[in-house]
Length: 134
Image (cartoon, rainbow, N blue to C red; front, side, top):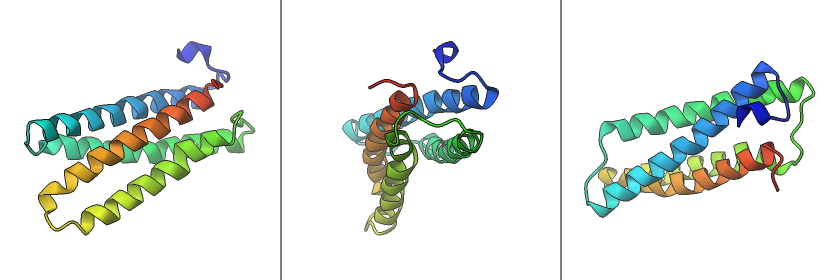
């Protein structure tokens, strides 16, 4: 899939690779949260590490995308920028605020599992618009 990219620079390939990893990671985080909810068990500490890693990857993705933008490479659709940065940031900030205000701290993982579902969908759409798909 990476060989079929509309842009062949190293930064473009890194941007796409991180994009695929982000989409897969948010799917895994959502699935992990869903399974934990069904079996009525709090997810292990690796769940939180994955959440942290995915948030760092989103920032790295933003930086790689910024480099592409500054070098003259632009996405075909403005929606790519909204789906890839603005909307996931809104979901994550709202989830962090909500989780901090929860009465039972042990339930915060549930908020992030729900957020992971939405961020998965948003980043998947960012990936498809970035690849030039309708």
